[in-house]
Length: 125
View 1 (cartoon, rainbow, N blue to C red):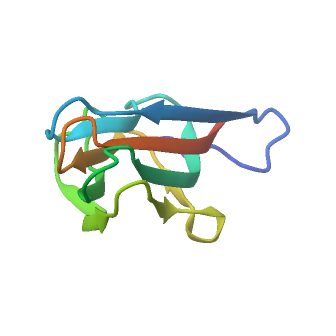
View 2: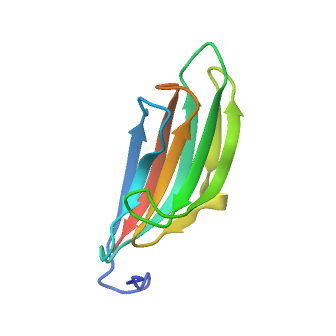
View 3: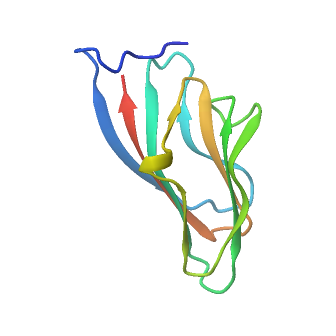
């Protein structure tokens, strides 16, 4: 598993922001770093916004030991209730993390289409 040299002159860093509103209550991959990608992802922010409007929605966010979302799930946030029309900051710059190769960030919402997740990260290669 490669871990790129962050100080190397040939290192490239790309800023990325992505969003996802899962249409089911099943665990869904928010961000995946494939095996042998030769990259690391520095996650700067994950926000879960309750777009349900009428009721609270439970949120779980995990780091999984496989890029496809399988393997062992290690919780970052576990079954946290997000009130209607409110947001939960799961990760911010002060609690950022690195997503290594063959790992994923997986989200689970208690209500279908009830939470919109946004994630911003740096793709470092």
